[in-house]
Amino acid sequence: MMEFKDLDPILHSQLRLAVMSLLISVKEAEFTFIKEKTNSTAGNLSVQINKLKEAGYIEVIKQFKDNYPQTTCKITQTGIRAFEEYVKNLQSYLGVSKKS
Amino acid sequence: MQNEQEFSKEEGFAIIQSMINKVRNRYSEDGHLYLLWGWVVLACSVAQFILMHYFHYSRGYMVWWACWLAFIYQTVYFYKVRGRKSVRTYTDEIIKYVWIVFLINIILGGIVLGIKMGETQHNFINVFYLISYAVPIFLCGIIIRFRPLIIGGICCWLLSVMSLFISEEYQVLMISAAMIFAWIIPGYLLKKRFKKSTE
Image (cartoon, rainbow over all chains, first blue to last red; front, side, top):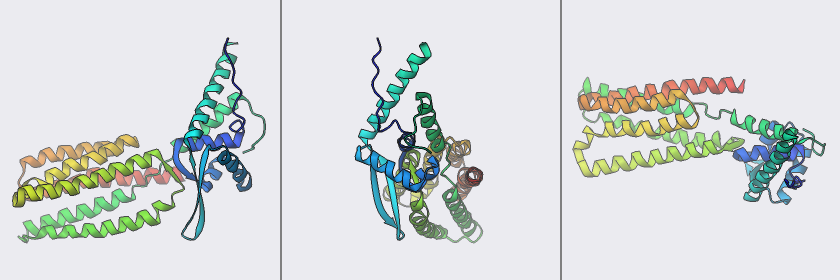
């Protein structure tokens, strides 16, 4: 019998999952880029990015470029492993629901 | 995009897929540097040919010093424009190293040929450059899946073989032809594709 694991609550949220899916495909991305691609508000995105950072899934680099603050996000090894695990669990759920 | 709202497993997959596609379908290469180097090297090679062939000026190779101006422009461009890019993909990273390897190879190759062969290096330097040009152009074409660059790379290899059968004086025109096929034409096509993707 197939054993189901609970989906990671950090990743099982629309915006956080979208951010992680973006960051898994690139080396690094600026806050403005993530905001544009996820169609989110700056406030909400900022809160969710902090949650991902606290979980150790992403690295947030804050710096100044041409006198403007710039926030860059990068996925960590822990984040990659968590994302892969999440996708694997999703697949196992969907695989069973398709069979039944 | 909502956050804590409940969503199904299927929707989870749809989010992942749509985000990955948003990055994958992005064209970050605007062809600007291909056009810069294409036109600079084309102008230098044609100028060298005219100076040596029509004016019998033995130091026609001096025109290549103009490349330093292009190099300075490129450095400023990288710092000012490319530094402002809001996302860096793994493709950008691989392409960066392809060009770094190319640069090291042509500088070291030029020095080694100069030391080992002295004056006779002029017989081989253009062939060596043509073979070297093919590598980054062909690889970039494969990496960004852009056929004109792949064809441009193959043209460089063909021109390198052709230049073995022509006199040294005319070999420099093979460099001009390489610039047209491998830098300028793909450069304009990249520019067109980039413009279309940002519309």
